[in-house]
Image (spheres, protein in one colour):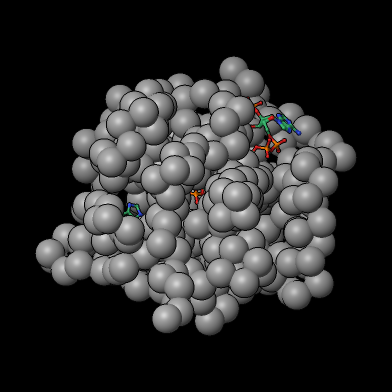
Length: 330
Ligand SMILES: Cc1cc2nc3c(=O)[nH]c(=O)nc-3n(C[C@H](O)[C@H](O)[C@H](O)COP(=O)(O)OP(=O)(O)OC[C@H]3O[C@@H](n4cnc5c(N)ncnc54)[C@H](O)[C@@H]3O)c2cc1C
Ligand SMILES: NC(=O)C1=CN([C@@H]2O[C@H](COP(=O)(O)OP(=O)(O)OC[C@H]3O[C@@H](n4cnc5c(N)ncnc54)[C@H](OP(=O)(O)O)[C@@H]3O)[C@@H](O)[C@H]2O)CC=C1
């Protein structure tokens, strides 16, 4: 009889990283995600202004293993470096803020990385897992429609901490650790103009009440440049305070803050879109790598186990896979 596969809940970069490491080691995996495709916070949204990166804007690679992986992604044509005219804004004052940091983006959109990584890995989408339980030898997952999935030999939960905690009931200690990680929201707005704004700014780290970041979409490699589209992110504090504000009001306030900040005339918008990320980033970084109850065969990973960035999420997926494989060899 062939061995039961390993279930991975969450097809963001952490789940995909774990899936790749396990498949490379000869294990069979099955991914589940509540969205219509992979990528999670690294996905891109299709819109009338083209495909937009509303979540992760770029990523850096400081760890050697991740750097080597990103080089491989670049060779496969999934990523390219992005060197925008970088600015900062402090107390409403814009100033150039060029640096030497290499920043990476998916091409032609951020979701290209997840699309590349998933390959032909078995994945079930639009499937929100609501329960994870273990019988005598195997694991079963239950989704929001009440459908059961299994049997599975082990389970990796690769979700933001509050969502992971809800599925970790079988391992109360892991559930408690995940429940101890608050995650901050981010309101993300895309705004497009029919003719290009007369500014050199292509990206800006903002320290403001409302705005945290802005990026000019067309400055990224491979993007559609028919419109001059900008992505604006609210700060964690502002996003938390305005969590339930209607999207139109969020757009009005963030585009208003953008118009005050940017050093040029801002004309009528031709397109706007708002997206609320409820669990955008962990409030602090951690050094857990991944969480494991190896005897049970239950693991948890995600950006919140490390740095709250793309690199941290990828490394956490690797660590969950490493611990699972180590336990199998015992
Ligand atoms: C607005 C924003 C800007 C960011 N900017 C940057 C940046 O510039 N640089 C950077 O390095 N990082 C950035 N990040 C952070 C980065 O995107 C994350 O650290 C990383 O993508 C997290 O990956 P993950 O796999 O841990 O989680 P996720 O990407 O959240 O993946 C979790 C997956 O689980 C799925 N899921 C959730 N619950 C269930 C369930 N019950 N059943 C099934 N599936 C479920 C979700 O649909 C999702 O696909 C940003 C994030 C946001 C939101
Ligand atoms: N919005 C979210 O939910 C969210 C945003 N995240 C952002 O992701 C990047 C990733 O961080 P990383 O360490 O990989 O990148 P950087 O080294 O580019 O930026 C880190 C912070 O350092 C400051 N910084 C960096 N370069 C400059 C510069 N040339 N001029 C001014 N400041 C710079 C900046 O911090 P401040 O805004 O100055 O406080 C960068 O933020 C990072 O931008 C996160 O904010 C991650 C997860 C969720």
